[in-house]
Length: 259
Image (cartoon, rainbow, N blue to C red; front, side, top):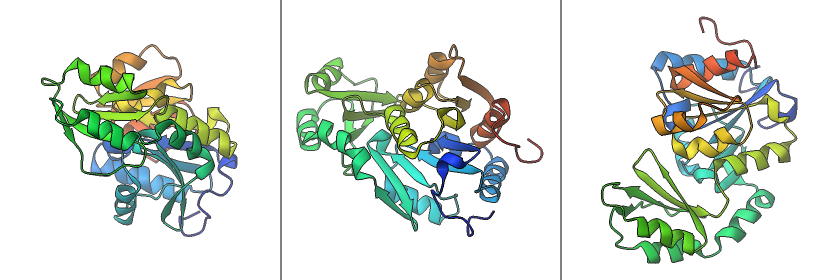
């Protein structure tokens, strides 16, 4: 079934399996050949494969990416878990019932965090105005532990990933909890979901109990944290090929020819 002959999001619970994947370094990682193999395979099996993006990227970036040829997801867990949305006619529409807890936990956090961390060493505010998070580029050599302690005292969480990003999030909100909330909402059996990632901001979804893969080329700190987890496959193949490797490892679905 081609992408032009299915209704996005229709009967996600009835799909053979659902890929819930990070973007940078994971779904977008690896060689051009491997990415094409993965994307063509998904498009050819839309009746049996569901697709969810679980990413730190915002809806605007995702829309531009997919308009450029990457397969459209049916749902998005974006902004490091602070957005939970359905894709409707190539429009990413937040699901209010699933985001209510996130909004309540954040409150007026944006203004408070930006004011509190202004001029803190090692943190450069990113220009994107996210709804329920504040993100900084990080210089780890200049970061003062007091910045982290201040965020915790304010009642929010800090997520540092790839040793260069510093995200302030609503307490208890990240990729893993938001993905599990969406999976439950859609009635998808957890053992049908493959969560895929490559950096520490993917840790919560790799740890949350769903079958998972840390793709080849992943951040060493992530691999160290998940190596002992029986439900996590640590792939040797990089990026997109690592996802295909995990699909075969868990026997979710017949994989593309040659993989």
